[in-house]
Image (cartoon, rainbow, N blue to C red):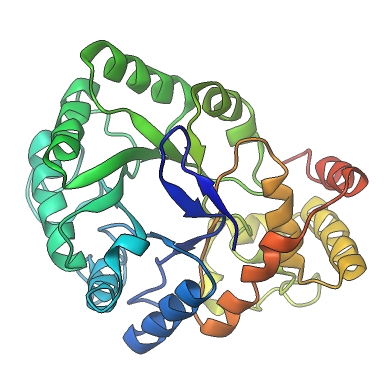
Length: 321
């Protein structure tokens, strides 16, 4: 496995990050343990979760993924694992049960630490913006967590460029910990949102980028075809999948991915991930897995390097996205 610095920090992370949204949802506890064991065995030291995973499932209350990770983590070398979690979503009833207020953040981090069975989180990220809370309140709360040692670094997810840069300005002026990492939605089939402004901002400010849904909700694995559009029932209601399945341009881009994959004798997902690493600011795409087999199909992607012609071909095929 290859390792790279997380932005301008000294922290080194694997070039693949294991996303754990499936834990407690489509992967039960024993399966989740096996996936994390396989990830660690393959050199993946970077795990990403969130407190709300997976509150949206009937019978769940949130924190399921963190709880499973905590049960696994207590028997592992904590110092060898880079653990990331997120805060923002609703976790309890009442006016302060969600958001990025100081009250919610300070309460939520204690809950996350308890579920994760650890005394610190390496990367604590705000899951999406909170328009009802001033930036300086949010950043001051996060800074206090860094100063106390409960959090090592902070980051943001789903922030537009203007707001990301504004947070950096507030942190600079008030001498607070700043966001060192951004988690955007970015893939070969979802480019404009990130490339329009965020890519240049992250490059200029040396912000690490760990994109989620790098395989376009599984579309770029090749499991969906023009004739078989029901390959994954757990994704059937995904708005992204519905849009891609109805897009001939998406299937034409997939055709190019498949062609390049056959030339290299690798799975199509390797090509989609290698294209991401060809971009100048990508640190570690976040991959998800519901089984050890799915994980093992992805770890070899770090060894694939695309040539300029292949990158240009993929860029041209996906320019509409």
